[in-house]
Image 1: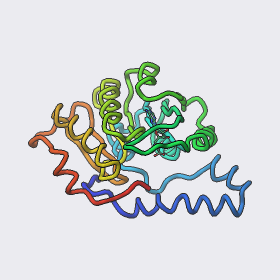
Image 2 (image 1 turned 90 degrees about the vertical axis):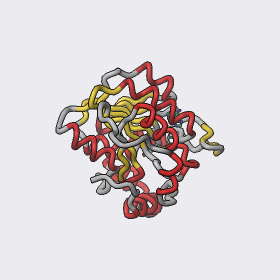
Image 3 (image 1 turned 90 degrees about the horizontal axis):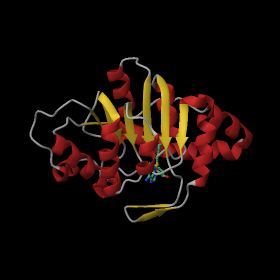
Image 4 (image 1 turned 180 degrees about the vertical axis):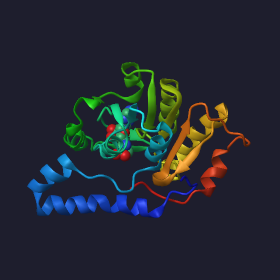
Length: 237
Ligand SMILES: C[S@@+](CC[C@H](N)C(=O)[O-])C[C@H]1O[C@@H](n2cnc3c(N)ncnc32)[C@H](O)[C@@H]1O
């Protein structure tokens, strides 16, 4: 199921998604608001971490968290594909600097996420805080955490170190953008952590990385630079 190379069709679908949305929004604004955002779609190409969590959790009712929610597209995939009891969605929706780039375009995303996820009721809980602050507000028995907030090395490292202890034994720690984007900061933070703890790392479609607590690597320690060299140059959709 998993591969060392992020697959192109997934990337193309994501790249054209905003164009398709813009077209519908222009041609039929009311339809877009009511149908596309509120009812929305089931993603036909979900990211690998979701598929992995689905497989290893085997139908169990899950409690999980996503760090970095933006417009809630991936959160919706989680809610529709997994058997969720509770999903904590962590995003401060504030300006932030990421690998030297300032992001200020957060308010529209906050509204889109609220609209998109409304139908899941109190199964979804939005925490409008940065991931370090939010950690104290959510339980310590999470079945999975998906990390996709600030992709700067120090932030990814901190998210991994803060949230790994918050997942249960056999729980899944996962995240997005394992690749050359963001200067390879995600790869460095992830690989350093799995090497230090000798954990088994998996990489799958959609540039996802994931590991299961308690599953150890039996091969030699990984080395971030050689992994980066082997990855295709795929920019964020
Ligand atoms: C790439 S987007 C997330 C996309 C989303 N996971 C998806 O796939 O649909 C990154 C988000 O991380 C949020 N963010 C930035 N810094 C953060 C932090 N310290 N803690 C939590 N979220 C953060 C940003 O506001 C932004 O909405």
